[in-house]
Image (cartoon, rainbow, N blue to C red; front, side):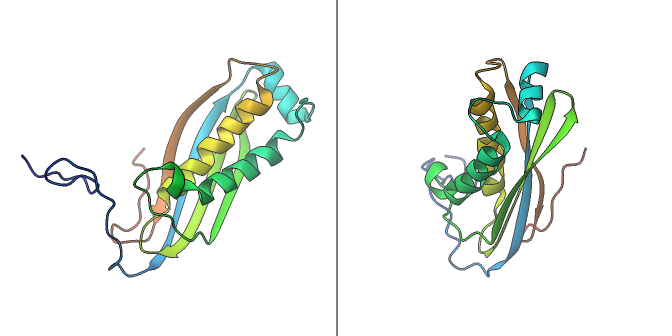
Length: 160
């Protein structure tokens, strides 16, 4: 069998959790984003805080932070890591497009990219849950890493 270049796949094709035990802990950060597209009615209800379920932004922010802390339980081969900080923020790109950004930090032996992406994803899904009574056609799209710093591979940003 051809050797794998994927760090979580052994030469025989079986999966493995990467051994990071010998790596030197370094400061690491990651930022991610998710885009949520809503109808104008749902966006206005979200913006005006008139949703029946309550404060969607507070719920989504807390859900994103809590989810980041549980990434090692959600992603099968992700390491549970000590997080230094997690932040989730919201900004409107236009009248119906909500951009959710997250940032996660640690001093550790592996990165926090998955924690940042889980935070953005779960915050976006929470916005959907809070707004679905107004609009079931909300679309969560383009969850992606937008920056990572630290570690052996160094800093990274998308080339776009």
